[in-house]
Picture 1 (spheres, helix red, strand yellow):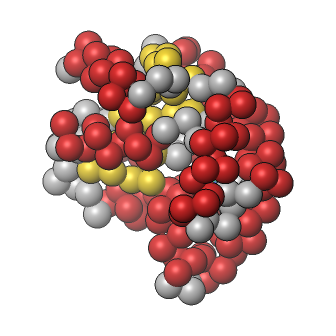
Picture 2 (cartoon, helix red, strand yellow):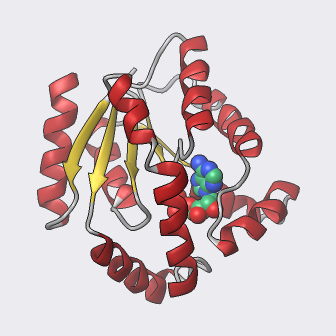
Length: 190
Ligand code: AMP
């Protein structure tokens, strides 16, 4: 299986690049943010809890996310590979992912780290907020999401460097330019 972790700050282009990767490599997509937003829309118990965290720009607790991810992963058993978008976001999540994949006879193939300058991230998220209607794409929540990213998520870079899975991708430029860099990185491990 080709399992890709697409990594980066909010606004780094994970969703956009995931869509292109899916088309090019025929992978399944798991976006924990999308799953949570569907739970909120469906007014489930998980959605009700998650909504509180998301609207404040905080992370949903690890146990809830890991349980949710395990269920989604089981629905993708026949997959030729999965792109993990927005997961893992903490070290316990990364360790849980490794365990889950190992139990299924596979592992993370590569972690693609989309590196984008902070000012550009804020501009992209504000622009997205104008069209997406996402409750967390406003300046105040964007700032907490970036703080959460720096404090809780960015340390995952070192985890994946140690695992020898980390590849830095320059996330500035046009979507096509960035996608060309992404493809080069994926083709190098295939
Ligand atoms: P995203 O769509 O990936 O930007 O995620 C939107 C929000 O959903 C985040 O700001 C978190 O509140 C929550 N979320 C998504 N994925 C995770 C995760 N792996 N761990 C914890 N919270 C998450």
